[in-house]
Image (cartoon, rainbow, N blue to C red):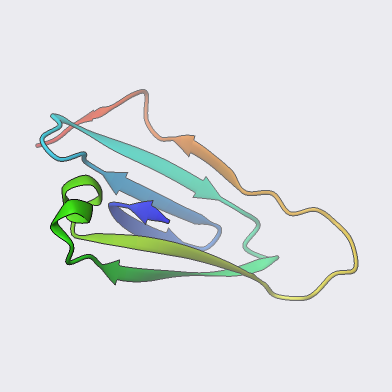
Length: 90
């Protein structure tokens, strides 16, 4: 589950999240092998005030689905902050 907005591209998702009242935005890049999996994002709107106070108006589920079932092997998902630190919110 991911809070914020998700931009999906082949082999990559960028999550942009600004905590409520925070002066900076936090970005996270998630990468994977686009030849190995298909990716999709499911958005779930939140209507509980206690949840929206912490997570925002919605949550996202990033679904990675293998294109072929392999009897063995490895699959790597990498997550890292983008940029050189927090980004100012304009």
